[in-house]
Length: 492
Image 1 (cartoon, one colour):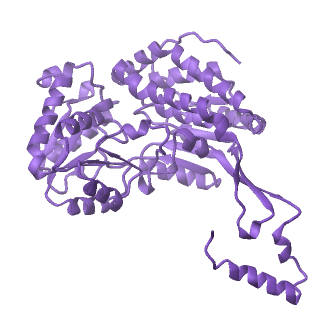
Image 2 (cartoon, rainbow, N blue to C red; image 1 turned 90 degrees about the horizontal axis):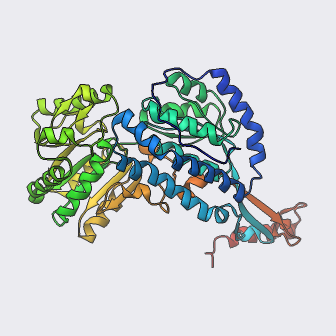
Image 3 (cartoon, rainbow, N blue to C red; image 1 turned 120 degrees about the vertical axis):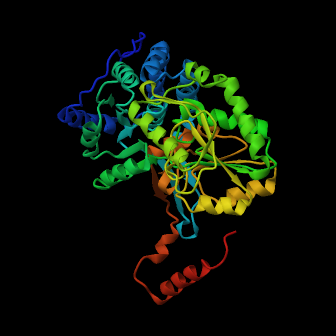
């Protein structure tokens, strides 16, 4: 295993070739022996693998700046904050707690199991597949990878072909740190994904859209493979009349326009109480001008704003904007589009009529619909009428309002007087619900996602269950009946 690393240059060209299906199958087969061996791996061995990955990642910091700039002009500060920071936090979390997570957890016997000892053991699932998206290609590849390694699995990674420079750099890092029978990364597009999904993995961790998530789940079902699906949805934000508008504007503008809106937990649209709508919009306009410049030309020159990942997605976002405007929506900030430069300005919209596509499709770009409301009950009813979102945000200084929204809605996660930041909280489960995802990730939840929780029962000579052995004499039948009747009593 290579222990020392030198910085690797960013990719200079796009690799459009698909991975060889036979090579994929051979790699998957080779990982079987390693996966069986790693069932007995110690915390120290797993930690050593993760540290090697960490060291290689940090050795290529500048190369990642270049790769992200090449793929979609992501600012280095955002590379640090939204790509490196989550992975480094995940690594530190694992290194400090893995020994405790791996220990078998004892459980108390139930009434009928008196005379036995039970425990839960955490086993690696085996050979796992991680399919990552393009919007946070480093964080959403290496974050799950850290959890999979912590749980003792071998891994095959499929990054997105839409960020080729970052994907190529990650492939070289993985190839430097790991043998292919341990961790392998395959570049390519749909044919490569299809070849991978034909294989009987023990677990698939997919991050992407609900539509593709359904295809992944269907493929996994052919092999009865477990899945973690981190999907998306239209994450709503509510700003009531008691909210701290200045703080709400500052924070929502950050969460929405981070990565130029290409964030699965970004605020998709904002419900603002009518009495504070104008003040909120003006506060948001001021924040945008302070951060990205005054006027469309200055904002377009800003080096603090990433670009849309490619021209196809730029056309899609521009189509949502144009459809809304054609139906009568009003631009309160931004509105500029340059398809050739994959540029869409940070845009605030209001007066969006029912039927506009922007109200039904996940935006995944720098457009923020602002919707005035009078009645909170109507807002809650509207949220509940749609598929359950990945995140929900409530801005209020009224406990009754906050409690009402949290109790009467469902979402993968939620923030009170904040947005997006729950993603980075390693002690919270991160995941969706129904249409926005299945399963959780991060910290111990990520470790468990890639582990099989195996229940182990150990007998002692005083097993109560001997009462249930035949022959069923009159006395024994009477005792069994009494035991069953005793279960009606509450537990002490």
